[in-house]
Length: 206
Image 1 (cartoon, rainbow, N blue to C red):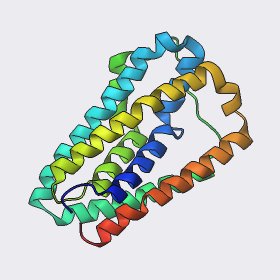
Image 2: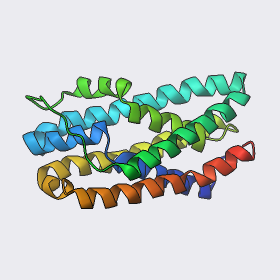
Image 3: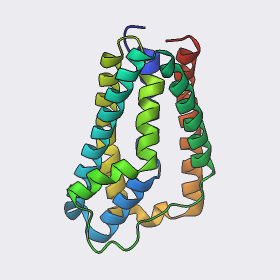
Image 4: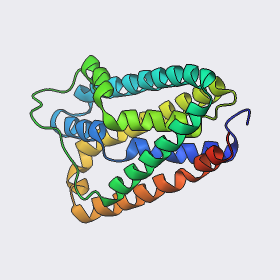
């Protein structure tokens, strides 16, 4: 495989959408910020999440790229491990029945605080590692990793904005357990289905 083929690209787009839009530390904090401080005051927080996650993607992609060149088998090992963990994450999303919210914030998160938070955000690590190991084939890895970074970034922007706006306008709706439970089940299923082409590529040794 010399590039991210249409089937794998489509599956990755689904994965990126699900990973970006489903509840997690960033989204819960953005929603709380939007609800408590409004859209304008939350803009530095939104920008910090975007930049921090992009830097994490670049770091993961650069580090794994060098390791994959020296040890090709590592791509397979990490790829399968990443797929397994993402499947576990899909189950956790589907079974989730409540949304965690940030507490104790007296003001919106600042830009550099939001950037730094990505280094300790388990969902950001799982998403970035899963994206690079499952959807960036080893052959022509640099081109594939770049495509993954660009597409993930483009999808991440409206997702970040959406969760902040949820906090501004629709928090009460999202706090309804039945609605959140249905949403999480659908997102978990989509995440699991999005892994199929990537797993097939790993099984084929690509």
